[in-house]
Length: 593
Image (tube, rainbow, N blue to C red; front, side, top):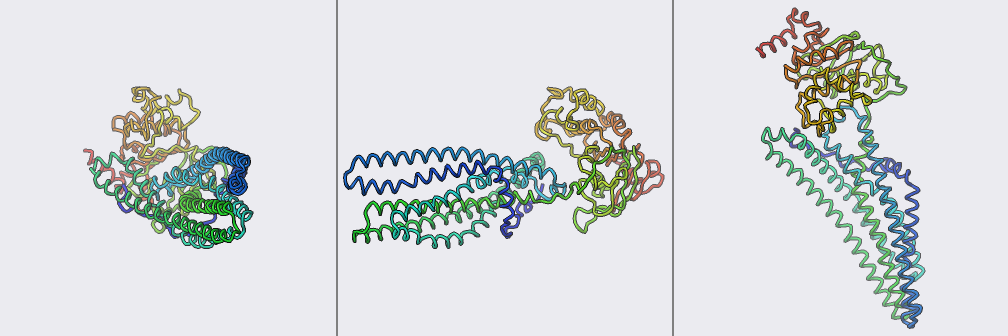
């Protein structure tokens, strides 16, 4: 499990806002521009009708209430109710439409984000806690969807509302309308002052939430290890610290937010006070009617409402831009292992594998492999042995092109694997890792993963060959037994046997077994050996193993150390040399004895 400080490392906050993120976001909006346009039209229509209310009120006071014209008063009252009713209907229809658009945008972004994550190299996942990746796919996408749908429409709508309000105000009284608009420059200065403070505050919230989620996800997965080493108290302390970081940054961001509304409110109250003072002074001179003052006061409240709404939208925009940036940073993450331009389909593999002066490093300046060369003929079985961290797994990962080589070439049947499509290459390879990953679902589903169109008979046959059928038949529902997340109902050995069956079912041309029998007991391994021999027959195979008794019959054994191949030969030849392999083998035999 990562150290305490690993999860408190934040991503940079001083990056300037990248306009490309908004351009990318606009590509998701374009798909639904017609629906959004219709929703905007209904909103404008409803808003325009609703904004007639102060004018109707003015007429009711000046032309009906004061002269005691009850007939006109009733007509205007009915008209006022009708205006509000129609406005509510249009607003409801628009809300339903935008909920659908918002959910479609969520679907589109999440689908594209997941598809991109599937293409990223092992290196990307090696460098990041998985929880930080998970929060971007789930939480962040949910957060930005409303901003991309309703946010865009609302900003246009509020702008149009503001224009209509100004027109209506000017129609009522020009002088008093100018009093209302005197507050706009003051508000503009205030909002510009708030902009950078809010963006940085919400970026910090984004980072701290990501840290917390990453730690939580790892601790759920590693709950057993936590209890084995009695780390509950220490982990709770770290989690409390991360939670406190979240709380502090959230409260700081909220305090920053809370400065926005009192500021706008204060400006609004001052301007409305100015209206009444100005109106009363003018009214004393007999130039303005009570209805005019009340109408302008009503429009003043409405004038500041869209400005406050735009402030709210702007505030929401700043809150969610941190999330949007993280989402599109992930989408913009370069796919380092991908098909080159004009990549060809890999022909049917025969199994001739060549390394030509291959060098590789995970970190710049720290080579794991240096000028490695070897030539493996079709059908040969090659064992890779050596100390931990010598580069054995790196070699098999490079054959599968999970990483790009730093220099040199890897050829299969004379084809440079960097110039063929990944799918055509990997679909002809069978790879079994030490960590046998089991998906949620049935045992059958997990085995069939190797060949989606496999029949039940083929699945059972593959399972029998690798000694998995006997324990599967004893499960409550046989092959249809649900194994839960990560195969929690299975032992490590059972997971590896299911992985063997899955790999065998795919009928690979090149087989890679990376510590594939490490969790299988010796008795089962001996029974499995016959099945393994069948798997290896006619296939080029690379076997990484610490248990040397399992690779004695391989055609060749390569001892890997110090970034290269120290010695090569079959078991008898290497034992006769009494070199590095001999020392490793005899030491292991002595341990068993």
